[in-house]
Length: 172
View (cartoon, one colour):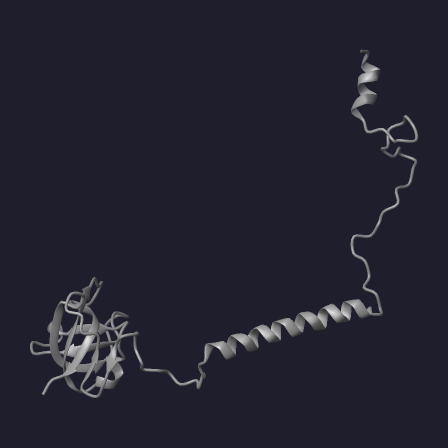
């Protein structure tokens, strides 16, 4: 094969001529715009699809709300975790295997350096405080009372003792 034949075989060829399809320096190239203008009149078909889509979304939201069976009043709930019992003197889950640790003291709101939401004030001062958090019960209902708590000790950066409370009982 001679070099001239090789050169013409590597370039695209137009189906009507045997010349390359690339424009030469003197030919003008017609450019099609990338962005096209929107039609000024919306077709009935487009309007139908837009309304049908809106209707499907609204029906989906309505069905989800109806099936949930709950009413959102905007107020926080203090129900706690499923299986947790709540009362005026006692709350939480009586699970001895999970909540092995216990402590007693006066429940005060506030943790230390972002650890815990509440703490138990005990004899011996701040070095003996137990800092508390709970994924099961609402500790806010017991603030200012002398209580016994059962829970699981978790690691802490600042607090000497940080506990995840699973059960709380007001001491007599």
